[in-house]
Length: 494
Image (cartoon, rainbow, N blue to C red):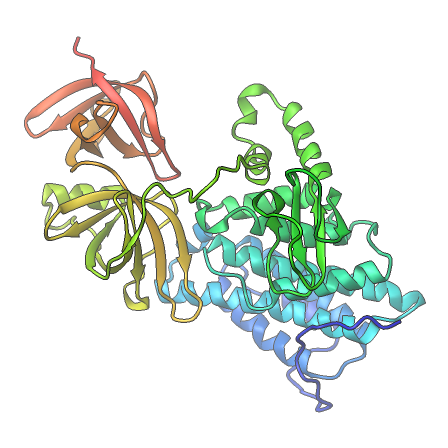
């Protein structure tokens, strides 16, 4: 019986477009010559070639051969277009944004081509059933990559990605292909599907740069072990389970945060425990000092959360509407506090959407959107309060207007700029630091904020504050992000 699929595909026409390459060998030669080190140009060229192919009526097996050639190249381009890699290219911010949006469109276009084949072959037997399997693998992989790509740039999921992933899974289930072997990427059908779903559970807008990619690669190794079961009810706390609706355009939800039964058009429970057990075994095989840094450890904490009652935010929030001047980055804040004219650093104007005693939600319009990371230090200035420091805890780039929203955790007190030197390398240039006085903190200890990796616990440092130089020793590390670290410290005069 035919499974009704809700999939978006381009309208097909019979016009033979001479710009569409339909010879696999010539296509492969063209793909091999693409300038993959220039993602912006490669994305543009691939989109110009792939989108017309999707609109042209082509026999399914012929189309599949062409799509498989594109798939290898798009996968390479995806690996080369992460945030750190794009920042290293000699292109402007607008061009980087074009490359980010273009790669999403390219992944979705390639998925669209595979979906055309899926629709044509969904009831196919024999040899064509093998082609259907390949097209399902390609569509699931590319929809998953489009999702990961948006998450790694803190962008929302593309419309209908979850709905279409669910629809493809329904066809896999209807064909009895839940235990199919892995494809050329080493991942089976359910692995592609379930890794994308589990990544959505990882609160991607709170993830530091590079972590979405890392978690996805880790989930691809383990997620296929999870099992989906029909129904929206479960016994006990729901630990190790998540709930999804195969008729919705929504990601799964952890069952520990829900009360059964949950209303859904087509509810399924995903039992994560076999995958979580595999991650736990992987950790046990590592040396103790390696376990803390392993991505499996972080994923276990996320997927097996300690659930507390009530709102996790510490204070109520109120609508605000003020505008603030924002200075991004420790070095720029340091220069601003010192009054260095040439090095005051960039500033942007932000609207305060809402605020509390501990933080603010800021919004930057497209023209003033700033490129920051989760864990970045920002300086925010209001006339009545001077410059305050805060840490970016989450980040979301809006799809519709290109603006950016972020959550800022304020640090107590007002900072002073200091310069830091390693006493073991006295001739080296000093690096910037920010001093927060002890009166600002409940623990009563002063803090020194430094670039990530610049200092370590129990290590000496020379602080230059004006004409004075003080030798100090780091004590406990109390702030640790990908961008900065904050240490309690004490005088260590010799």
